[in-house]
Length: 106
Image 1 (cartoon, rainbow, N blue to C red):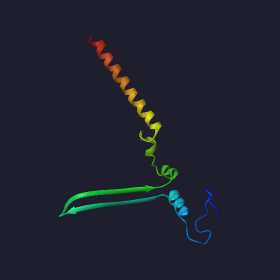
Image 2 (cartoon, rainbow, N blue to C red):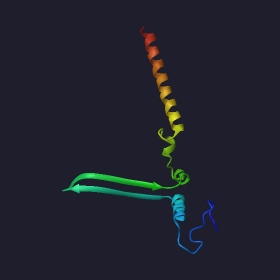
Image 3 (cartoon, one colour):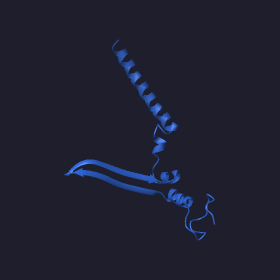
Image 4 (spheres, rainbow, N blue to C red):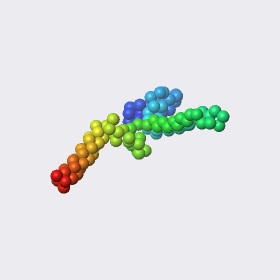
């Protein structure tokens, strides 16, 4: 039996899972890895590193509410267009305010 992607189901052949099966399962279900690293010297905190890693398919990530790549202007042309539109509207509003002040005080 195969999955919709054409890969055999995990464990159907009686053997162990291969790398493609494991990767498909990880992307389908998602994996979260979290951890903190702290380095202290004599009760003085020198360094804290907080690690948060989510590995999942795009569809699974969207189901979890993670879609930052769609709103980041560096990664999405749609987000870039929205940012330029907001900036343009702000500039037009500022120009209108300046022109109104200039007409009041010639």
